[in-house]
Length: 390
Ligand SMILES: Nc1nc2c(ncn2[C@@H]2O[C@H](COP(=O)(O)OP(=O)(O)OP(=O)(O)O)[C@@H](O)[C@H]2O)c(=O)[nH]1
Image 1 (cartoon, rainbow, N blue to C red):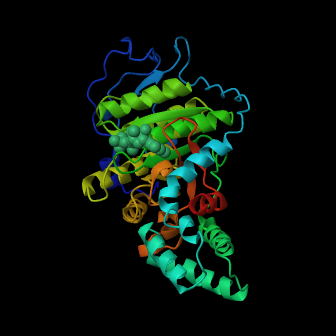
Image 2 (image 1 turned 180 degrees about the vertical axis):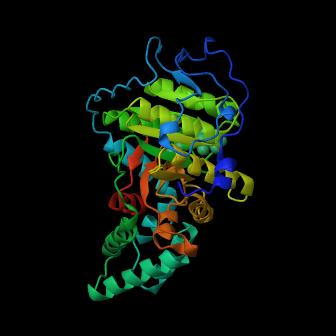
Image 3 (image 1 turned 90 degrees about the vertical axis):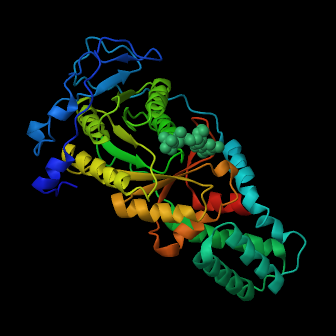
């Protein structure tokens, strides 16, 4: 997003931040500030147009380990590969199933001890609509199911259920995509979403996931409005042993800009930029989000490489409106769907896959199935369909 006009460039310059507190002061949670980060106020430095002019990272930097004597461009050591985790697949699948069983009661449960007749299809239609699958996906799934039942002469309800599971998995498959962690170094990932969707929690989980893959991670606390959000991210950083670029108050675009530069200078593999929660109807905040995206592009012409929307899986059909609005504003590359461990709205992803209400079928990289740091799983269409129907 480096196609900004000079007027926009002026508008995009990080706005003045309150004067930085003395860097020698200790910070919370045994996290020490990096003494080699320059303390100038961000606002005195308009965003440069060329990389040669790029300043050093200036936002306060919190590190989970004392950073004394560390030069500003000291590489961030890659996390040692984690001990191979004991297979936890059953437990997260169980949680997903348990969560989606609220949907499943009206889906999987419909097949118990019934005849395969028009009544079953009518009940399925109602259940899919109630699960927020939307009209398009419901029609598509049931048309495919009717065809299969006729063609294969299915007479047993369990067979029909298995057929629906396969059709649903096929329908959801376009949303399945591996996260391209190695596409750039550092990979700059911007994260947005409405208030309370699970952005900060998901960033913590992602940091853990990436570290398990041996990647070094740097976080930018772009939610400069809510002190608690910043503290929360710093806490996540401490838990994950990663650097968090943070600044009290001030301009989130400036924090993002500095984080990209710091990530590059330190040789980080991934830079994740958190942003404050906002509703698509808060137009000035959506403009701010666009600005953050543009300013990231000024720090690295190809960035952000990934723009993720975190969506609460309980949101149902409103998720469609969120995806549409955020996509229009910041051109999403992927979704993280959270809280699927407790939702009756498990059909929403079917609506996304169907392009319901003009939504673009944005890939779902991960699903959140709990509040713990391990409770993030790659989205796999077949597993999701099975959890929904079994
Ligand atoms: N059960 C469950 N809870 C989750 C999941 N993801 C996040 N949460 C919870 O959702 C709540 C909100 O999460 P946050 O990460 O603070 O959300 P946020 O989007 O950063 O919030 P704002 O900064 O206010 O916009 C917290 O209580 C999280 O523990 C999930 O996958 N499952």
